[in-house]
Image: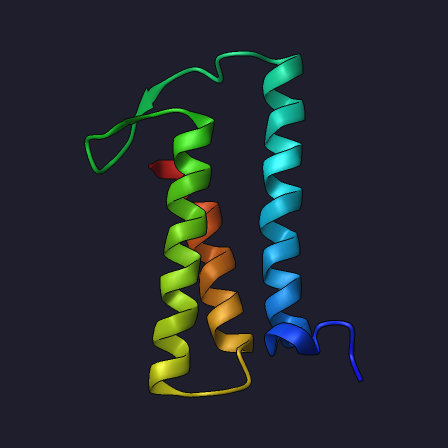
Length: 94
């Protein structure tokens, strides 16, 4: 019996949530050593900070994975590649 079976989790689901926790921790450390993060206006016309861009990236990645599951099912490698590309684009241009 797996340690994650009590909630019917799979290892990819656990890895996704682990990524969220690690990204929140790393952003907290980054904010501690370099406060503010400099607001900027991206291509969508939104003024965002690093935390805003992280939130947009995480929420967007969750929806990308759900859409991938809905259209293609498993495996999720395609959804992961799209999510990583989305994550980079948000931090670069949004």
